[in-house]
Length: 119
Image (cartoon, rainbow, N blue to C red; front, top):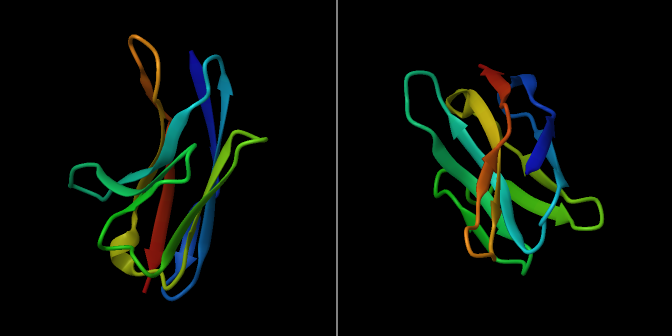
């Protein structure tokens, strides 16, 4: 089992910046892919950005150029920094952890953190 602890988010101003962090704890943590998804009001959950243990990254087109994902493997933590916030970035942001090896690799979700961007 893997537990995820998310922090950051809250009410932000348009044009501002935010930093989210997610720390994983538990067993079989490496290698993995960690990252962020978001669910805007009334919409489906969508990718924001992910990063693997090997350094491979994947960004949604909507955040490229204003979003950076990074990780500290010593702390089992992934960070998401987003600049130039827009009202359409308003969503519940979920951390996702995915095991990359094992006979039955699992994935886990955090509880989500609300980000609201006011214009």
